[in-house]
Image (tube, rainbow, N blue to C red; front, side, top):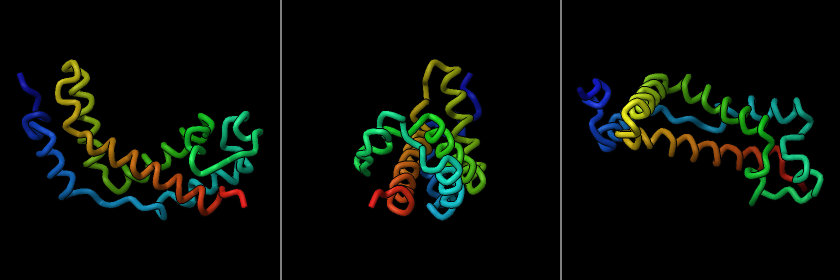
Amino acid sequence: MESEIFEQFPDRETFDAYWSENYVPVTYEDVKEAFEEFVSSVDGHIFLSDYEEGGCISKVDFKENLSQEAQFTFQDGLTEVFYDKNPELYEMAFAIFEEAQMNGGKGADISRIYGETFQQLYDEFLDRLFDEKLQIR
């Protein structure tokens, strides 16, 4: 028996249309304070120790060298803001993901736009954080 979630969203195009109609944009201003407070609270030590000790912190590769704590903190901060602005979209995407997991992965790509949007925002916001707070002058 097909689940109700897949009856409502039988394919990616249907979910993408739902997303387009309901998505409330998340901006850097929404996460800026939390991101910058974290950086300040750890005195700017947000990188893997060997990367930081090398002293060659660059915008090109800094995201790949964030500490696990920094990654989790930034991802959690973005997730919280995303949920606050888009609770129904978040819950729907998560429900589709869970249902797909129970069905051996069938339908997993239906809510792919959530993951793509989250990753695009995460990358964009970390770039802004670097430009405004981390850039070594």
